[in-house]
Amino acid sequence: MKVAVRYYTKTGNTKKLAEAVAAELGVQAQPISAAVDEKVDILFLGNSYYAFNIDPEVRDFVRSLDKEKVGCIVNFGSAAMLNSTYKKVKAEADKAGIPMSEKEFHCRGEFKGIHKGRPNAEDLKAAAAFAKMIVSGKSS
Image (cartoon, rainbow, N blue to C red):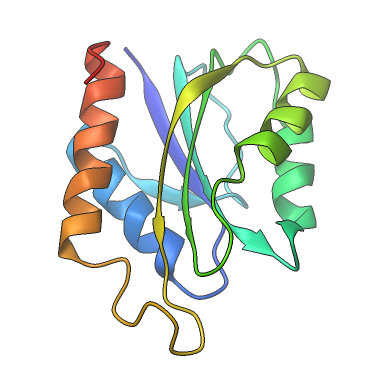
């Protein structure tokens, strides 16, 4: 199974999660500025809320994906205030004609002193375990 990890971050929190996911899967985490040029079965996409929405760069990245090259998107991320970006990312994936897994990973992220130290070691371990579970096809 071929996988790729892309992420968008302004604070570095989502990059930490992306690196944990990528390390578990034996691939390199790359920012969304790196195109997905090869066919992948699963694209792990890390992002967060900014001003109550996904960043326009994330929206544009998802819209730019080639549905012939991406089998499925798996959403992950962190946020200080809001939870999942799933619905926002899925709306863009639907427009691009790319399936999106119903499973996702989300944890708290530090922002302006809120949730200090997050994502922490436990969050990173949980993100890695989530990625392993997704790739193995085992739900837990």
